[in-house]
Amino acid sequence: MRLDSSQQWQPHHRFQFLYAPVVFSFLWISVQIQDLSCLLDAQFFDVSFKGTTSLEIVLAVLLKVIHFLWIVVLPYQVHGLDVMLFPWMTMFGFGGLCLASMFIVSHNVDETKAHSSEELNKDWARLQIETSTSWGGKVGSFLSGGLNLQIEHHLFPCLAHHLYAPAQAIVQDECKKQGIHYTAYGTLFPNFVDHIKFLYQMGQKPSSKASGKSD
Image (cartoon, rainbow, N blue to C red; front, top):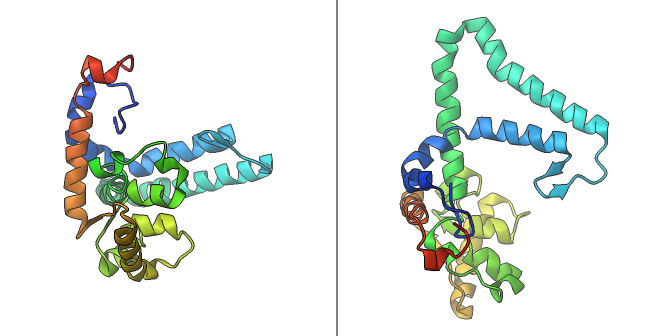
């Protein structure tokens, strides 16, 4: 998917607002492949592992294999494909859709992209606030483990998530005093709708003037 104007545009991006929710359902498979890739490369994307021994990496890979055997192979062996396939697909598909949706909406709407600048990058706290969104309150925080209040999650990563909702009121009040843009939604749905709109806009072919050499 194309989530930033710095990414090269491809023709299939025109349809990303349609296929994105389907892709979200494959989050579990994607995470497993990504984890194994990071372990075998001994780095997390551009960050190399420091102090991690080969034995620890082997142990991590072994635990991944056990996880796969326990959650996929064993049910297949015990119950058969026709019994376990639908519940397995439902669990990982629905779970992936929910988790991916809660993650991606927090940083990929118009309002979180419009405030990135060199000046903003000098202020860590303001960067966390103006490039993230929060939705819901106590109920959403209980159901998502605090992922809904992403701004507060970024500002206070060690704070217990049941305290995010009270902290949100304080953060919003301070943002209003300081003139800092705070993006909040009442529920996940309008945040998700704005994300789909954002995907549609990012999926349109940039004009030659706007894209320069990126295309």
